[in-house]
Image 1: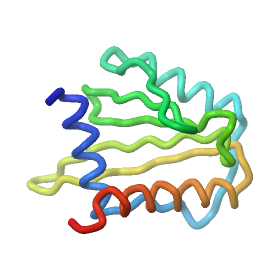
Image 2: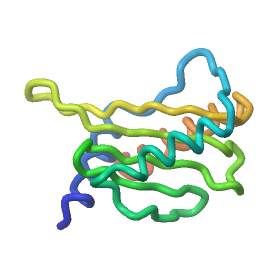
Image 3: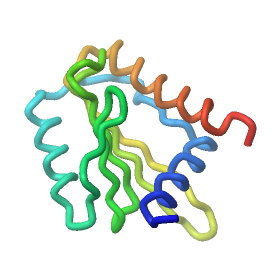
Length: 126
């Protein structure tokens, strides 16, 4: 199993315990800022080639233990970006989820619900 697959598995497994949640307030940013962040993450030396998965485009960044996904133009919360990072603190392993959007807040909150549901569907019985 590749390190990237292990990283993605660890992120999804940890996310099953600590689901992604949007901040109480949503403040959309400029669409150009979403593009700028995506370009930054995909240019990292250990970033994988961008992969398209449905309405998302994702890269994994091995050295930073991150998976970064952005919505494609067909997604209802486009443009948005979600960054998940595996963080080890002592013996605990957690996933920190950060996200930004240039879409309407209700669409963005729906995206966060979508991430939570994906985690539940993937690891519901664990």
